[in-house]
Image (cartoon, rainbow, N blue to C red; front, side, top):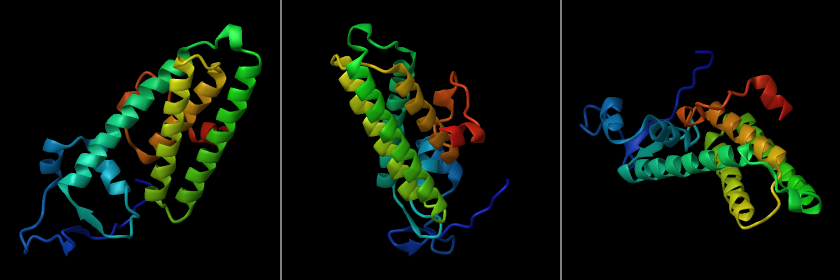
Length: 188
């Protein structure tokens, strides 16, 4: 471990979790019902110094979010492998490439700013979902005949993977993709 952060209290119904009140849970019990990624995302969804209210509803939501992101990972892999459409490659591809590159740069910068703002993972994960939404929109557009730019898709995939690596979520879903190093992140 290179860094250690002490988080705010975990509460249940806005009441401090404690053994004496018998309102506590063990991580192993939570992992019987939820994936480790969902639990990690749930813990990262609130600023580390703020109290975190535990609930099955919020863990269910975190699980659904991990499923949505798993779907986006599959789409980014597909787009990065798919070659551009030669018939529409000129004007449409250039416009698409510029739009996607601008969006990726904005999301990466916003994510970095949120993390630099006292490790604000709640806000940073919001920008990750903004990027995921943009990838979904782009994926749909490509499947509806919009010109595809493979380099832009690869760049989106690399940035999304790097963000998820930083947050430590869904690492197994990227298994067949090489990991981006911190130097590569700076280059993105």
